[in-house]
Image 1 (spheres, helix red, strand yellow):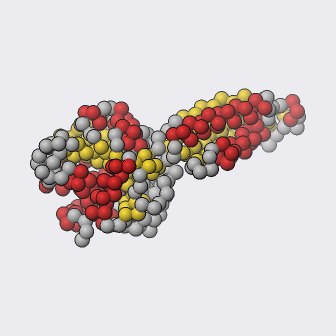
Image 2 (tube, rainbow, N blue to C red):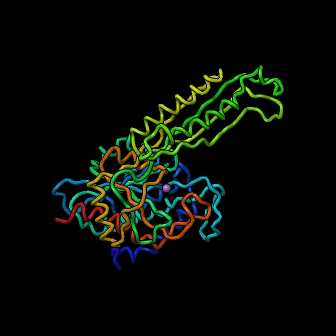
Image 3 (cartoon, rainbow, N blue to C red):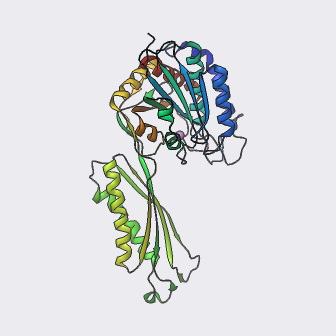
Length: 388
Ligand code: NI
């Protein structure tokens, strides 16, 4: 077995924790049960320090190695929250709460990092300090950002930070990582276009916001095709188009548009923001309508630092010998990006095999991946801070 032997032994126990989390999903910052169990176990394992309530419901555990000659501190992060999805897996340990589901495998991430914490607290075979970070609200709430803003990095002296996410479509036991962007920045825009409503049979007496908004939607396609360098990645999607009328014969007063913008480069991100705002306001003005644009920057790009990526890759090589460095970044977003903005580090994908995609109601984390994931977390600590 290429993984650490201890994790082959611990796998059934870690899988049992995972299935318990799976059965009891919690959303956003409401991870009270999960956070409570995580803190309880970290104390049981003998962590030197366990702190709850960081970034509201985040939990941090500190494990000191046998020695600390260099004063190095390595952070490892897992996410704990679930999604507002109705589970259709039919599994014996399926969600007990309708409308909530661990459809992104955060149950697996939390369990694997707990497993690594148990092993590290048992063995302490390293020179320095390991900090295990369990964050709430990865799925939209910015729990990672809240933990950083709560001063976590300074408080625990974290110098570098590593995160992992499972990925369907990559074989179990294979990792994937590369330097640079791994996940996109995800920004949102909302526009209320106001014209002048009226009788649909007398359109010349109105300023039809439905027509104006239609032109806006078409013109926004030019951002990807004509504004941004074709060698740079961008997605602009309009996802909501809502008039205030349900009628067959009324031209409405306003139309609401909402959409998302995904980019991998901060410069492209800023360029898109400027251009999208100009297009919406300018198109509205062309037709005599007005537009109120609200542009909201969301999670930043998940950016792997070159040197730390090499460390994370070496750890994955040591664990399984199978690392894919050829895959493309994903245009989804990840709020581990805030931790990577605050400290150098890296984010790695762990194969989940041939399952439904994350965020699908039939998705399930593969427990066979546990020894690989837990081993990688432990190996990050032991290889970055080798025992003196
Ligand atoms: Ni996720």
